[in-house]
Image 1 (cartoon, rainbow, N blue to C red):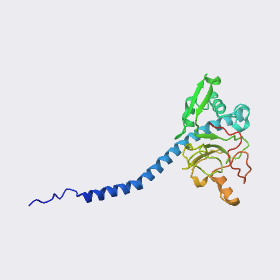
Image 2 (spheres, one colour):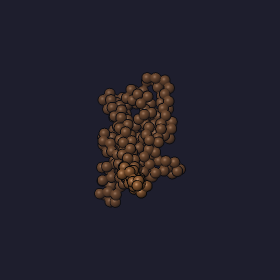
Image 3 (spheres, rainbow, N blue to C red):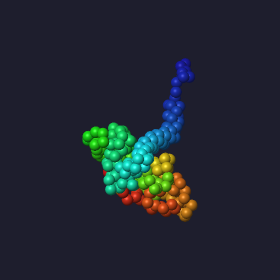
Image 4 (cartoon, helix red, strand yellow):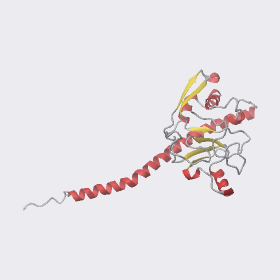
Length: 234
């Protein structure tokens, strides 16, 4: 009489194993996706930090040398009123390398392309595509919690959405979270529930402490929407 090998799996045993693997995968995939997004947001925050350091150094040098050309974007809005013009000023004065601008302005699903004409103090940058950042028109007189830059998926004090008004993906990051870089130097990766202020004065204070404020707003005032004169592409 033949007997079944003890090392063989029955069909039921194989189905049980496959089911267990499927359940474990269902738990693991969201965690892996979340970790990937967090890593991408950290990279974007670091890019925003590099943009900020270049902007801060230019403004500090301008103040020290009384040079009206080396300022925060809000102190020369007529000349630095576009992302092209501001990035060009940073590159012309060697606070950013022209070749690095494309990397710093790009993020998941938001690919900025940068064309350079000329060299040195006469070079000009032309940015096309989609920038991962919007730069707010901060000025030297603004408080440290004034926002210098935000990831482009966020409109100040408005709820995050996975898509834009036209139905395209709201890159980078959709409604998974957003990045803020403030004039004082601190930056944050924030969740979608941080996007809007809570009720009352306490909610506003918490919002301004975690997100920051647009340059034109007085402390304790939150005006939804990106400020006039913000720098963006497109």
